[in-house]
Amino acid sequence: MLTLLAAALVSFPAASKEARSPTSSARVFYREHWRVGGQAHPVFYDDGIGHVVQVATVTRNMDVSWSADGRRFFIQDNLGSNAGDCYVVTPGKGTVRGVSLSALIQRTPGHPGGDERPATSHYYVVCSEWRSDGSIAGRVSGHTDRNPVRGFDYPFTFDAGRCRLRWVR
Image: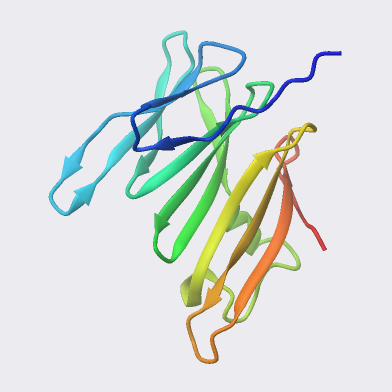
């Protein structure tokens, strides 16, 4: 029995400017672009057969990880000191389709509420790893910004094939 392992996280910006699919010639890569006041490196998906599309912009740093079957990848975008999001991307023929897990979490029953929201807290949605069934282990965590400050941590799994998030209790 052959077991496929998900690719390791590749960080941008870094010495390696690409994350290659484990099963094809597809890749995710970035081009350096410095601007006054910071960085804005465009990130692209290249299907390996001539279709290239921009999928993100690195403004601080991000990690990319391919699923073991090479059909999807996630981008862990560390937007700033108070925010992080994870985008799950499914390439198609000449296109890509993605979902922001931060946005999906806000629409999922049982989501963090009150002051545990992006606008009122340090709010980090983090994808940790691909699981063997094609799901992603992750969590939304952080701390509220209003006194009394309190931390929060909500683990989840995301079924990338069905685009469903489930809280791990």
